[in-house]
Length: 378
Image (cartoon, rainbow, N blue to C red; front, side, top):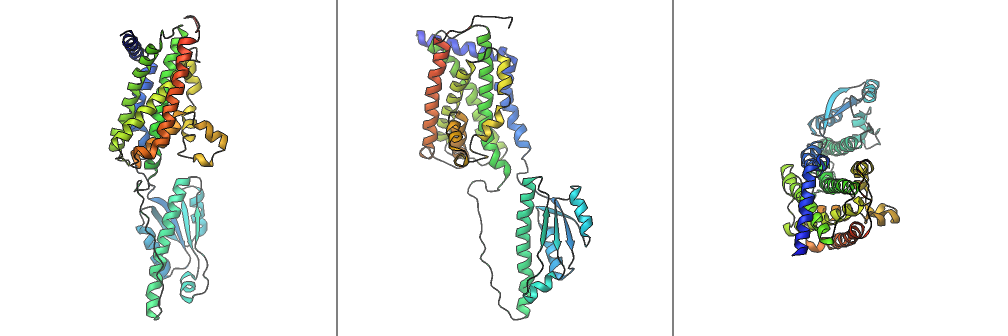
């Protein structure tokens, strides 16, 4: 009973500290809730559409006009004008009024029909925005292929020529079916948000605890505090993995059992890591100064924007000391790719090892190591 009473005392004291400390309440509770609506808003449209394009038609032939018609019908681009003045179009590109120029050279159709090598079509893209440039480049390639094939079929039949229809590959993504940028980045960032709100909130409260010279009387009391923090983290995780993914219509529908177990181990490892890190700060506000800029670093080390295999081996090995790495890798597979428990077993074992390792380190720091005495003036 003493162990249960000590654990309950630690949990109750921790929850009261969260409610009484306004910065911790905002980080642990409000920040996760608000980010669930704020962050995905930037990726609401998923793919870039209606990007402005200028067409310079120096051929003025049926083939070039048909090409322009295909561009007008493409949802990815918005043809602002068709002219024969390349310099005027170039000035529009320099002023960023258009994102690309399509230049159709003279005698383009004649070169196609005669079989001689025609002057090449030219694309001029604004490379300042990689996502927009990639969307325009893919749209132009698809449109031009379809337009040129249709332009050649009519004259070939009239001449009695037999044309070879190229083999078309139909690509159908299994999970990110719309190939949207939001469906790619938000599921990984959601795990990072859960990690960072827990880390910053727990470390802030632990820094305040050290500033007042307090320590945990036993491992049971520390475990109770950890369970209180974990309950808050699990609510944030279930809010993202359950409601936000449904509300924002991101890929979802994996195994519920795998999601629950992965979330439990991930949140537990994150809390243990935060308790250990928090034991090194002597005041709460100092933790915010140190950890405020860590979110971008944690995301880039998670393996989503840059594969772990492509990182330097030493850096890739060090990333596994962060619970966010295994958490992102495992939870994205479970939530978005319908992975089973066996598929994410390496990530679950890694999270369990981090939970045990950082839990023992936090116990040692908070119950065995001497802490400074209270100094309210600091």
